[in-house]
Length: 318
Image (cartoon, rainbow, N blue to C red; front, side, top):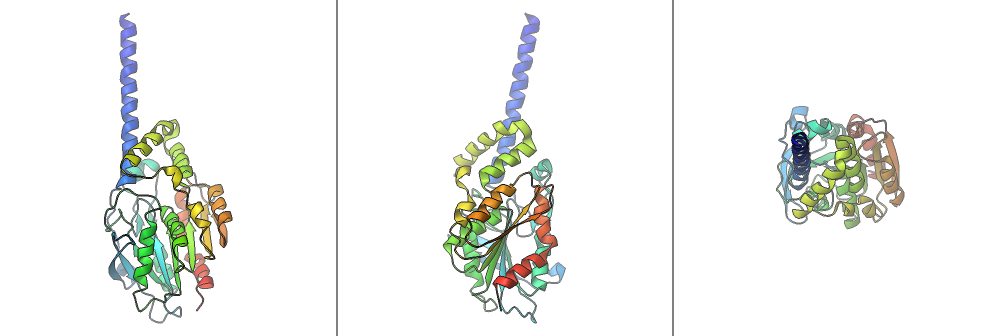
């Protein structure tokens, strides 16, 4: 009987520890969805020899957004062609330093979006880099919605660049990464000002959540993910099943969209992106980058700015 009681107590203790671990991990994920920790800017365009303006402008719903406008070289032949870059979650305009606890737990890697901006600027484009709501130096408006509300940030960015005399209103393009790519796809049905777009690894959020959970948590994901979503929705988040950027891409009109996806991305899904492209009226690709990790897909775009430049040159003719 004494042995039985000891075993029972040990089981209760183990169950309590496991339950506490599940709640703690779910709370960590939910916190990053509701109000992610801010990453400080670690470099400026000036350190890469690019002139830039610190800018501030409102999203469509008035949320304050901060960013940089990087003008093309004075001798550029492109005459006002402008690209708006939209970062992923939970990054900032520079990408991610991947130094927070969640990044270390999941094996995330640094992403240097300024390298891509530099390549595009040197190719003759104006570039706007900005922090989405709840990220970087922009204002808080929790929770993060992985593209839905963030589309209002992209619409605000489009309105802002059109106020500048060095921007050609008829030659505007956007490039988004991950949740930023989702935001781009949600933006396109709401405007006809975008002439071309690149979506780097957009994702149906339920697909991403299950693959991400399985890869990082294994069997525990079956318990952690539902609890995370409950916490997220209690703070005003939308059901994850409702965040389906492919349903927005259907209504993108004639805007050419280049899809890029890592072939071996364990978190996203090549099949998911292929379905988005198939539903898009004027798609290019998907262009599949060789990858064993999700971050290889981002790095492919950064390492190959000429792919973006050639696509935009084709669809933003002089």
